Amino acid sequence: MSTTQFPGLLDEVNAATVSLRKSRDEVPPDVAALVDSLDMALHAEAPLNLAVDPYFASALYAGALRSMKALRHDNVSAQRRDLRVALEQVRHALRDIVGSHWVSDDVPIHEVLEHLVGMLRLPQSDVAHLLGISTRQLQRWLAGDGSTPSGKEEARIRMVAHLANQLRHAYTAQGVPAWFEHRLPGLKSTPLDLLEDPVHFPDLMAAARGARGAP
Image (cartoon, rainbow, N blue to C red; front, top):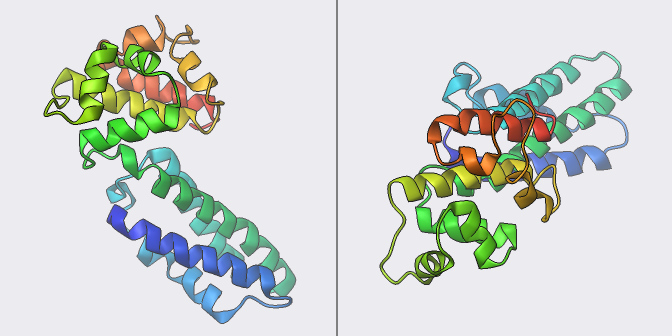
């Protein structure tokens, strides 16, 4: 499934949750039809081809499975009740996926950088510190004066962006940058130090996901 299709599917699920909430007795036919089509919409026959964060993908597929199972209830009241809960899980997962598109590898690095700076809401000197560069260098990149991050600099920006995108679900605006400065259980140094070598990125992502209770 192309990531460009997620916003459209999110709109459909949003509309379905509203329709389901307004219905008093049974599951509306259009909602049942949407749920019944989720396996095709999400290409359930090839789940590994879903090019999104594995945590979001697992939540999405789990919600879809629960939604389809809810339709099998013989009791209409139980069917509607369980479907409302399951569809909320689908909706939240899709919302997270759509909201995380900015860190995708196909997004130009200057867009990733601009979004990261806006999300962190930190002084430029503090952002530069996370990225391992000077404040002036950051300002040149943001100004778009022809200077563009590349190589290790681009890799560092994308790593910080991926980590911050996970952490924003678990920490306040002040807590996200603080996470990078603390020695975490299972890591041999602070995340900020470990960012010097991309080989540590999988461990850092695992730690960031752990902060939000993800596997």
